[in-house]
Image 1 (tube, rainbow, N blue to C red):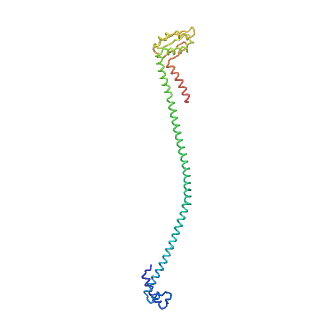
Image 2: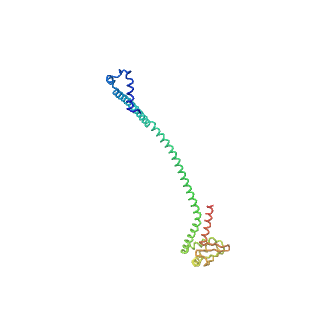
Image 3: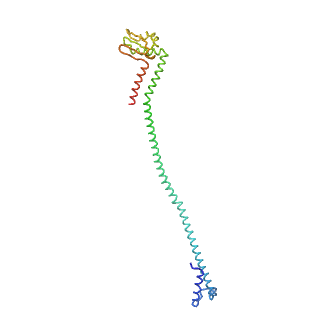
Length: 258
């Protein structure tokens, strides 16, 4: 950049060389008054250049401010139009696309989770059913045996306490052999005296010409009642009847399991 002192120094000799050729008619009265003074003329020119430069600078600045203001206004207007026009549409479009994608993804994930949960629940139920079935199958025989043991105990206690109950058991056994000519009844000695006193009633269960013989047997259980004849032996004891019942029930269980 050219300094102010160099401008002043360069202006002075130019005016010295051209002083004889230039007619200072273009300057006003005040300029003519300084025509014969080179130093004064240089100062005046310097100030004139500065004024012109300032004016041009001010015009440029003013124009720049105006353009900047216009550009700012246009940008603000475009931004306002964008915010009220395109931006909401883009937001809505993006939201809708995101919502639709998210909704579909959520539905798919929900169905997938539910399907997996249902599959797991079915597997658990099937496993529990199989385990229950195996447990029941393995326990049925045990339950049956225990039930019969309990029944045997209850019936035995009842027969021991009630003579009428034991007499009913004997009558049922005799009915199975009443077609035989000669029948032997074997019972425990604890019931011998009582059953012997009921012999007439028991004999009446047979057809005519049949003989009934009653024998005490210490080897038998108190709930035992054995019938012997020429055609074989009938065990009407409580435990034997329960064993027969158990065999039949076990056969039924095996048939169901197969």
